[in-house]
Every structure is written in structure tokens, then in C-alpha cells.
Length: 340
Image 1 (cartoon, helix red, strand yellow):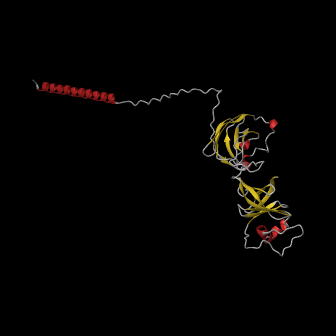
Image 2: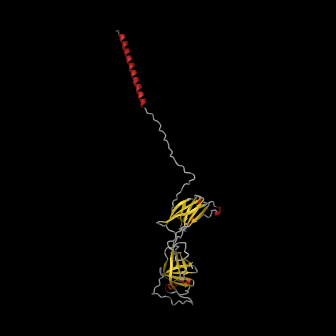
Image 3: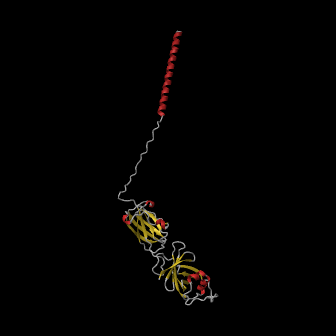
């Protein structure tokens, strides 16, 4: 074969081989790209959660919501619970109505009394006040209508009433109208007084009976009580009293012979005489004794005190009267005749 012919065949074979290699490379490249596209995972947006509304049973419009008030005992000053007076309407002009107010249950409890009350009104707010105290009454803030059980430890007064006050505003400071109703509650004092009529405030304990002596003076009286071993000087003109310890003893003189009373008058002796002679203020207030001292059986009883320093002692005198001695200090105060 000629040299030119062999050269042409060699070039042809070389071109054919190159085409085959290029075709193979393109095929491999195509397959690689296809595989890469098949392996890509497209991100899908998260689906929005489906909100399922719970089924609810509608409350009939004719059924009012029931309010269960909490019985929280509060003690406040009288001025803070008194009925509104400056801007209150007259009762005839009031649109507030208390349709019902009653005690539906009462029983003894460990601490005192458990009382259940029920009330209904057309007001916006209300409060319940117990008559167990006057200067510091227990009270509760309550809805205008409802039922509530309250606990009372004690009552300073016999048969304390409950008072319901109804207001025309939820905020009492904005109220311009108020109406009230009272329901009685039977709760006697733990002890009874030894005389009638009994005071409203309960006694502090049982009455004490003991030996006593009394002597009338021009302007008052002296009373000695064996139970307290004290002498009470009651001035009639100033309606005041003082208490003195009985410091007289049998070794001391009964009287002062240098003191001579006028006709029909007497110098007090023994314990009365010592207080009278040693205290010129007592002598000036009482004057001379109108007669000798008289022994008798006295009865005295303390009254419960709402405020410190205002105790009252009820004392039966020789002629059966009952004096009420109100304490204004440790050993003095005012007095009145409670019963004749």
C-alpha cells in the first residue's frame, strides 16, 4: 500500500476514536447531571395547624351567674361603715329595693356562731354588718344578691341584729344612694345581769355577792366592798367617783376626837373616816356624814368593754338602787343611777 494511503487510514482511525471518546464523555456527563437532579429534595412549606374549636354549651340568658362571696371578717371603725348621709337620697326618692333579707340557718360552732344569710336586691353592691359590736362591728363586702355563711366568735350585745346596706354603685365612693334593712338574730349573753332592765352590752361575768358598808353624806355617799377591800367615794354634784384602798386597821383610831361635827351630822369612822380625814378634796366634796355607816349585802358586776378604758361596774346600794360606775381612768370616773 502506498505511503499516502496508509497515512490517510491512520488519520481516519484517529478521528473515529476521538469521536467515540467524545461521545462517551458526553454520555457520562449526561448521566451524572441526571443523577444529581434526581437526588435533590425540594423543601415543602409546613402546613398550617388546624384549629379545632371545642364545643361549648351556651348559658341561657335567663340564668344569672351565681356569685359565691367569701366570708372575710373585717373590723373597722364606726365612721367607715356608717350609712351615707351627705349625698344619700330620701327613702321616698330611692330606686333601690331590698326584695328579701333573712337568716336561713344558724348553729353553734367551735368558736361561737355560724350564721347563713340570704338576700336579694336591685343594687350594684352591698355590705353586711353584724350587731355583735357597735364601735368595732364585724362586716363583709358582698354582692347585691346572694347567700353567705359568716362566723362570729362572740357578741358583745344580746341578740345582735344583722344589717344589710345596698348601694347604687360598685364603688362605694361613687354611690349616691343607699338603702338598708335589718334582721334580728337571737343570741343571748353568756351571763345575765342581776337587775332589770338589762343593759344592751353583755356582762363580763357573773355577779359577785359580798359584805359591804355604806354611809350617806351631804353631797354623796361612801361604799366599802369586802370583795375588793376598797372604798368608793361618789360625789353627787359632779356625778364623779374615786376609788381608794382601805388601809385602816384595828390598831388605828376610829376617829379624830378633835373634829366636832355640827348638830345632826356625823364624822365618819374607821376606813371611811381615814379616807375622809386624809383627803381634803374628799372632805370638801362630800361634806359631813348624814348618819352612821350601815352594813349590808352588796352585789356588783362588771360589764364588757368595747374600748379600752371604758369599763362599767354595776353596784347595788343599801336601799336597792343600782349605780353604774363608768371608768375614765385607773381609779376614777363618772356614775349614774341605772335603776331605782
